[in-house]
Image 1: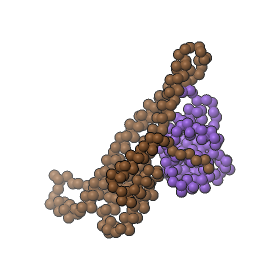
Image 2: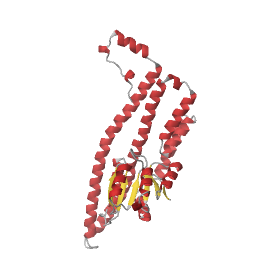
Image 3: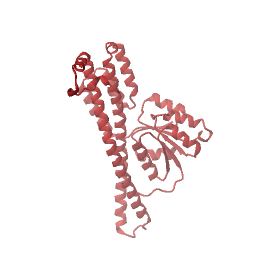
Image 4: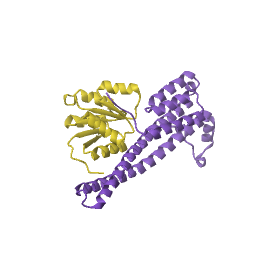
Length: 126
Length: 197
C-alpha cells in the first residue's frame, strides 16, 4: 500500500452515513485526492458555494436535501456547470436514475462500490 | 411510534379500575400491534449496539490503512535491489491493498443493512398502527394503499423483488429460495453497476 501521491484535485463526498463517508475517504485519499465531506445536500451546497471543488460524489437519499436536488442546484451555478458529478447510491431503479440524469449528474454508481472501479470512474470523468 | 394503550401496567399498581379498563380495551389487533412494536424496538436496540461496534471497527480499519501507507512510503524510498526483503515487503503490501479493497466493499453492506432494516422498522410501525384501525384494516383497498406506501420505501433491487414476490403470494419457502439465489448472485458480483451518462 503506497502512500498517497500528490494530487491537488478536491472531491466533495456527500453521504449521511458516517461509515460510507469513511469508505469513500479511504479510497480517494489512497489515490491522492483531497476529500471534503458533507452529511447532506444543504451542507454540500454551502461548501461548494464558498470553495472550489473538482468533483462531487453524492448519495441520493439524505435528510434536508437529497443528492438529485443537490446536483440540480449545483448545475444552476456558473462555477459548477461543467464539474463532474457522480451519484453513489443503493438506488438502482431506472426512474430515479433518469431523474439524476435530467438533473445533470455525470454518472451513476450503485453501492457497494469497488475501490478500483470507483477510482477508474473518477479518473475517466475528471 | 407511541402506543400508550399498549404499555403494560405494573400488576402491583393495578386497581380494579385499571384492570377493568385493560379488559375493556383488549383486542386481538392490539396484541398484534404490541408484538409488531416489540419487533421494531428489538431491531432498533440491535442496530444501536452494532453501530457502536462498527464505529470501533472502522477506527481500527483506519489505523491499519495508515500503517499500510506508512510501510508503503518506506518501501517506495528503498532503492530496488538494495535489500532482498524489499521485494517481499512489496508483495505483502500488494496483498494488504487487495484485502483493504475487499474490506471496503464488505463494510458498505453494513450501511445497506442499516438502510434495509430501517425500511423494515418503518413497515412494522406502519402495520402496527394500521391493524389497530379497524375501519381501515377491514378494507381491501386500504391494504393496497398500505402496500403501495411501503413499496415506495424500497431503494434496492433486492427489496423490490422480495416485496413483489411476497405481495404476489409467495410462500416463506419460495421467498427463502429466492434469497438463496440472490445471495449466490451477490457472491459472484458483490459490487454495483456503473453508468456514465
